Image (cartoon, rainbow, N blue to C red; front, side):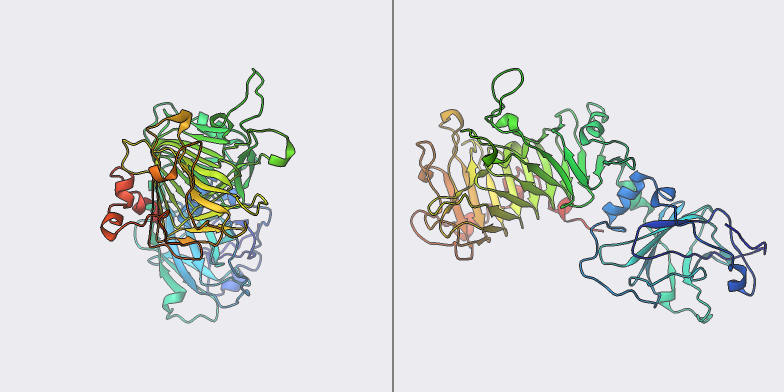
Length: 495
């Protein structure tokens, strides 16, 4: 790049919108009275990328904070030539993020400057992207240590000396929030991450870990069996995009193992989570076993097996057929998740809350019975089991062919007295009017199956579907069901 030799400072930039790219500014640009003449020889290096400005770990943090997004724009927006700063943020000591109010048609070389008093901050590198709202976001790597207040200013030649608020923004200091995310390691199918597989990243976390560690997974399909062991707590698996970041495998119960025998239901999972204080967000967990691919009796195929305390799943998808989600033990909180399957696809003995989730029952092509949503095995010593609150039960199955649940007694255990409550939820027309049914000789009437203030065509009032009173329903809170733990604040935290 060529730069003017004039010696009074001003910082100017240029970029191409709508695609992730970067420009390199290795030196300070100096100003005089004619800014355009000073910068006429400045050009961008369009071969530069975001990794020239931030590491993969810091890029992951920008996604997690919502400053950047790879999910695309929710609705197509026309580029604008009007340039307004929505916010300017000091992300790190050497990194500034400027979010503009719209998708910009272009950013000229002389459009923006950063000033600390009368001094102009020098820039090393820059790159550009968008956020989920479709706003243009430009990242600037700076080389000057900031000591006081810094302002981002629009400095187009038609701008007046008295800048309006949208042309001049004080940098918001978000360095503490950025640092609070803690340690981040990244996984990518290409070379932009620290690791190529999820399990490699988990293996590098030390045994006995007691510090928050985030494994950020860039978009891709990762076909591997993943295990978060019980001696690795405080692990988070965060995906780049819930629909485009997939952890999958295709084991199933009746599949023969190399050493003899079969995997069984418990051995068929794609992902095993044993660690306490675990979090998953923006991911798809899948068991991709195709039931039609083999002629076998035992078709159970688990996507996720959980056995730990205080585990949170937010904006996470669970894909499978029979036995999709096995909540073996412990406490789990599912918030705004999507769970699909057909037979007993949410099952186990844990205490779990499903809030604002979509529960999708897949059709098996039957005109009579297409499956069962839940199969709890709650121990009688536990006061609570599953709580579904403000969720939606959906299906492509025929009306009245799916049951809310049936009682699972593993190995005939008489003390597995299942507990399920559906409250304030939408029940589709696929739900059978009886609601619940028997399993392996055990009656649903002996289980703890209740409803409260549900709505939709699947609602019915009869002696098979016991309704809670208001006083009884008041006991079924998130905190009570989860043994005194309330994860709601964590799950609903936003940028």
